[in-house]
Length: 296
Ligand SMILES: Nc1ncnc2c1ncn2[C@@H]1O[C@H](COP(=O)(O)OP(=O)(O)OP(=O)(O)O)[C@@H](O)[C@H]1O
Ligand SMILES: [Mg+2]
Image (tube, rainbow, N blue to C red):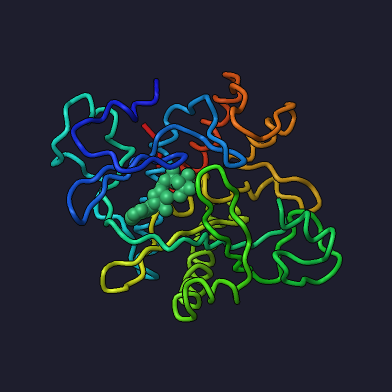
């Protein structure tokens, strides 16, 4: 199915990120739509992953409901039947949309790492640290860290890469109170969600949160949360420290891309059908395992 982003005309389109399209409903509410686009290495792939937007929306909705005792979030409802949309628009948007509070985005990626992998593993091999935080020696690829680390980064503009920052620099950017609140809440969300996921056979190796503020300065969890796009999900049954884990996230596409001669600048190569199908299966499996439900 083609990307229908451009064909929504009943609401004002205010922004599109790499994956989401955002429309204004009224002064306080946005329509937050997960497309079927996939981004890897910060580049949007030219090939869609059909159904991905539905899966992301279901997974994020699940976690927003599960974690609202830790922090309020931007989700108001996934029921869009009251919106002034044409039947064709409704058809496309249903199931991939959330009505959310319009909040002021705090320009920080609140990353939590529970396992040693990716850029963290690369840095560890060079300097026995992750984002400048020194760790014990002798750890292997994919090892569980002695404790989960909060490693914030800046939220880069289009075409740029995020940059890791220390907790001190985070305080300089957003003030001590919000910095501490975001750190503590991010770690609490990670611990809560990773315990739940482990019982369902999934290791959440790392994840990224975003936060926003309302007019009173109250903090909300925004964007997506604990999805296969914003996290590394590993099946616990094949987990083996020292080896590169199988995954239920976009690592599969990243691995495929690493084996092409693509230089990681746009445009990315077209993704073959079998890789698309396999990616769909992986995302579906994350949804099914985590929530115990199947995408229709
Ligand atoms: N409740 C909210 N109110 C306002 N903006 C939000 C809210 N929740 C998320 N956003 C913003 O909407 C955008 C979601 O789009 P998407 O996830 O596609 O972006 P992205 O490509 O990951 O990153 P970028 O922020 O660089 O566009 C993000 O910029 C995010 O910060
Ligand atoms: Mg995003």
